[in-house]
Image (cartoon, rainbow, N blue to C red; front, top):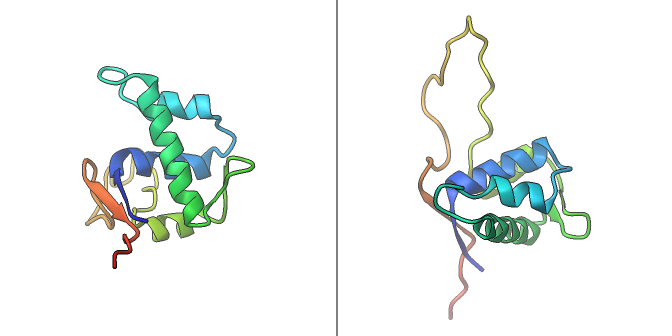
Length: 116
């Protein structure tokens, strides 16, 4: 089964799920929508879709609603970049070089639809 998802929201979910695994559905539905243009039901739908996708990839425990494995494995399996380390005020102050994975605002296709 293939998925087409908004990479910006999905990346935010994956990075956050491994960083804060105790967040609840209510926490996520509030974080996964744009309050200026969407209701929380859009966030709830994204949360449910993203959990199902990760579950299909054996990266999400549906019984506990918690991520499985490592963030590195999840990012690799989903072809998204790892979180960028925060730079100190005296550091470079931004990203140097390119960034792997899909860019913000793009849709990402994960998996292949089997036809035949």
